Length: 178
Image (cartoon, rainbow, N blue to C red; front, top):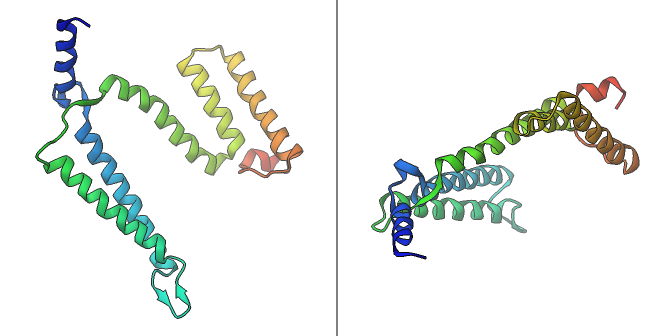
């Protein structure tokens, strides 16, 4: 590697995040907040189950409650180091361009998971496949409809009929008696 390209790489790696993307420190802080929230949910839910010590030993939420507390404490430490630490990593973790590509998959996937609750797995999957085929790859409507429907009819046949494994269903399946 030549000296010029090596210098450019070093400059890009130390470039402030506000210009080119999210820094390592920002990602650490975001992850710490997310893990803190998971810890809080664990603590609240396991406190509800019983996080104390019963006459016959620990209650069912005793250990998970403490794991949630450990997650909260560790995430606060990570957050404080990411925001106020003496040595903060300001190198770019992900560029905005690449982050947008991640969101192009993450957001529709989150919508897919939400749609399963209302439409059932098969209809939501057909819509998910069709959306990706049309938007991302620009397939024709005919090919998109054929593939998204064929995949889900096959999955329905395999899981519901052959394996007799019930999966989440919505109003369409109810019309067909499932």
